[in-house]
Length: 196
Image 1 (spheres, rainbow, N blue to C red):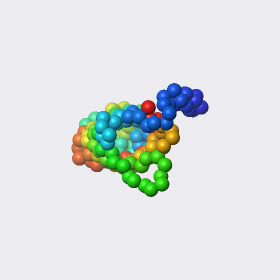
Image 2 (cartoon, helix red, strand yellow):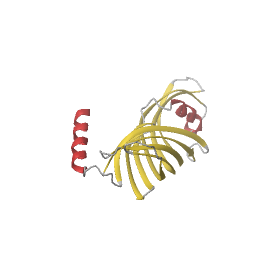
Image 3 (cartoon, one colour):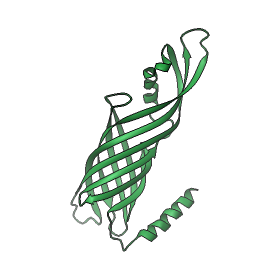
Image 4 (cartoon, rainbow, N blue to C red):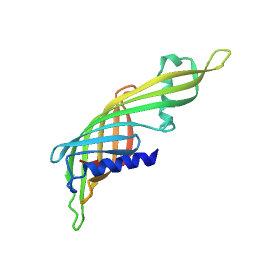
């Protein structure tokens, strides 16, 4: 399956390639937290917008979901035992300011960037718990965990001179407004995009 994806990406890349001049749009893969597909388009020479559709492995950020257990009214007078994240979907939108870093003798283009936007996350989480009253049997319940808030980020990006490929690395923080208000969470990622 991975081989078919890479072959399809190569065919699309050859189709979109226009003589090695980088264009104003790019699409690619972000590895990290979250992991997903990223689309970026420039609206001015150094202003861009980016959108991400992503997910995260079930074991990531386990402590966050354990700490969230007590905020659910359904679990009043209950004791946390464990949890399992069934699925996670991240949606991100960002406005980015981008600036060149002059490097003597470097082929290609190196930039740094910063920006802000919003992040929305939906996670289906199954909790195992027991009540504090006899018979104290374990119970299972699935909840939908929704997180939302403003995101602030910074990173670096390298664009190759002769091929329409950009590599990037970035860090960001989320100020959560829902469902755990004013919790600050950090995210990191690296990836690449095909420009067209």
